[in-house]
Length: 151
Image (cartoon, rainbow, N blue to C red; front, side, top):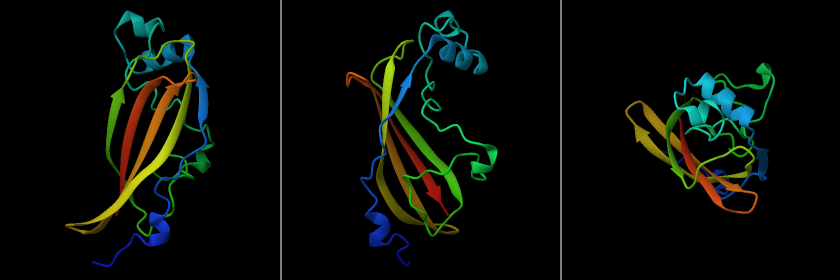
């Protein structure tokens, strides 16, 4: 198999985004809880954020024409790969503490790994991005690793 990941592409491993800050509001928690059909009163009243609340919290708000075909904005952290058809490869989320209204959260994303494998239908490139979310004071809140697969 010919190597698709060139030294230049591999040199991106370790690149990090600029920290992004978001203030969590009771209203945002309530909207998310209602839209995801939460049942617990603490979520519906916005006293505590339910699991997965953080997923879109730090996403850019962009116009529809700025989305890729999969509905996700272009990610400046991830280089252009020789394979372009992207698939979800999984997510691992470690919760260190709960999210509450008034929390000032800071997220940093790191291109933590990329590697290639041979699949039944040809080569695959795996790209892993780790997002670390902390409070403004530096207390760990969530660590999430998302894997995307290009074929």
